[in-house]
Image (cartoon, rainbow, N blue to C red):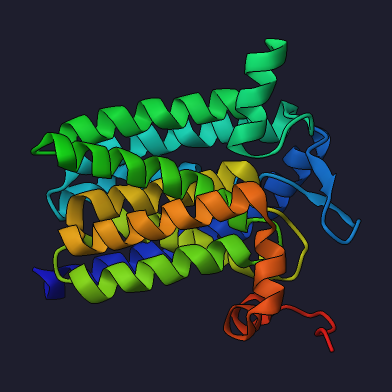
Amino acid sequence: MADSLAVPFTLYTIGIWVCLSIGYKPMIGFLERLGMVRANYKGDSIPLGVGIAIPVIQVISMPWSVFEGVERVYLVQTCFLVLIAFVGWMDDRFGGTEAKGIKGHVSLWWKEGIWSTGMGKAATGIWVAIIVSTIYSKSVWEWILHAGLIVLLINQINLFDLRPGRAIKGFGVYLLILLVQAYASIPLILCLPVVVTVLFLFREDIRGKAMLGDTGSNVLGFAMAFWLVIYASLFLKILIFSAGVLIQIYAEKKSISSLIQRTPVLYWLDMLGRRETRKP
């Protein structure tokens, strides 16, 4: 089966890359016309929300799911991925800087009654986690683990998206870990649309020429969590969940970027491919 699909999926990958190459500049123009241009960490104004390409490719790739007989799970992934992308897009488009982090958005709502786009994004992520966990869990404890994974990873990849390429690198690390443990059981079509699109966007992201935004980083977090929920071993789920809790607690109190700066291995990975002057 895998051999018989090698040629079609190779052609599919090439086709998606060509589509992205043709559509990238018009997409940038669309974002700029909407005013979706933000200053990055260096103060340069660059397009925000290029991660919108991920759900678009996910949707147009849906017919290919029949090749591996996973139409149902692909449809579930697509529906929730598009929803996560939409609320991320709303935050990119209309969100302000009135609050940072989950604690900040909750505090803003609780103390001042202001329902920010960030709070709406968090509420949607929780709702999606509840539904997906209900579909793919066999026990209460598994349901709790799955819901926690989805909520944590959606937010965690977003936390990484503060420097060029960081969110995609974080996603890539998780993907490699998952593939080592479950490469034989994951249908190619579930991952390929997201992975091909991310690889295409990586060049502009790592060069600091465009930002995935919450539109893209939240989608990457959800996609990774979705694959983990269905295909990862219990041990790997618990391991990543535990790491996610620790990262979330740390991020609410301290700076992830400062931690990366102080940790040689993390700093090397963070700087890999970036055209910047390294720290002394």
